Amino acid sequence: MPAMSTIVTRRRWMWALGTALLLGLAALVALRVAMRQLPTRVAEALGPRASVESIELGWTGVHVRGLVVRGAAGRWPSEHELRADRVTLRPALSSLWRSGWRLSHVGVEGGYLALLRTRDGKLSVLPSLLDPKAGGKGEGTGAHHKTAVRIESLVLREVSLDVFDATVARGGPPHRLRLTRLRADVGPLALPSLDERIDIDLQATLRGSQRDGRLTLSGRLTPALRDADLKLDARGLDLLVLQPYLLKSGEASVKSGTLDLSAHAKASAQRLHAPGKLVLNDLDLQSGGGVFGTFGGVPRQAVLAAMTRDGKIELDFTLEGRIDDPKFSINEIFAARFAVGLAEKLGVSLGGVVEGVGNVIKGLLGR
Image (cartoon, rainbow, N blue to C red; front, side, top):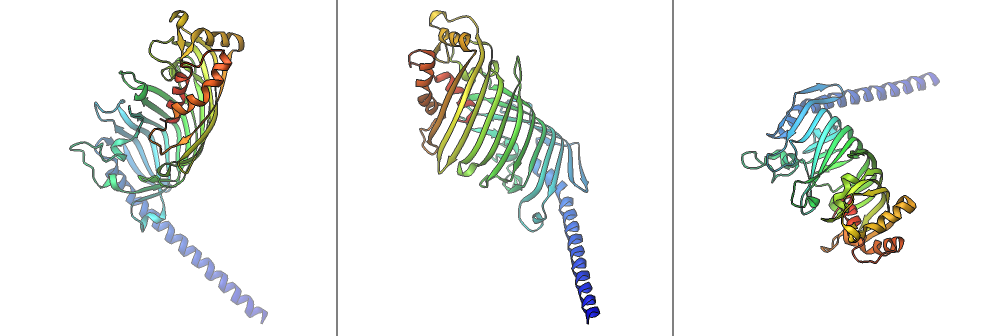
């Protein structure tokens, strides 16, 4: 009897092993089928302003090399919306039986991306691919604009990012912020609805005219629900590239200095709570404006006196309010919470104290 029991047990194990091998083989075949479908889908989805050097099918996924998406002439602030030396796409098995695209992994190496903040504060990213209204006459708003895409994991390595901000342009071209050495892990992404929680871990360098600074952003957000829990930490940002957010027209311009900023923004049930701290370090201003000259609405001489005394100005703030309120403005909320503390620190009156510094928060965090 023990021998018979052993034989039965072995047969069960053999059956289980055979079943596992068959399932594994079926999954491998299915994955290869899905990957063979990807090159055609990629070519269809990129649109008329895109070009690639090659699309190759490999064992680890589909490799797109030399990807370029050109910007619309006269409507986009840079030559390209997107460039990438190498993009790797790995389909999910569920893409075989579900509609749309389902990718388990998208990796971008050596890329460039341009973002535009329009004058009304809206953010435009890859309009030729993601915005059906941006195709323009003759470019079409075909099915690829309507296809749902789910990316489980988006990995960016050594990517450059240009943020063109028209909200501080003052009648000229959009102000350009340059981020380099960007590394990010993001996902999942449900496009175009963005109605699922997205985890974010991002590090980048902000290029300056005198020095470079570093920033990190981590946490999660659900854009469609306006739900978020994000931590921002920035160190050593060059004030020369940030001065459009600090200064009003006619104020003394920055000669040198850096900015540190930390904030923990939570948004839930349409309500924002975001405490933070802003530090101006080693600030020096160009001469001008006379005795009544100002910097960010604060008397210039009071700012320089504080810098001479302490070498920095530290400002605590808390942003709170209902996001769904049409009158909600991060800039105004920040100014209301911050004015008294800054005035007391510098020993000046409250008039016009925080408009400039509030614009920095507005530019970095939103409206």
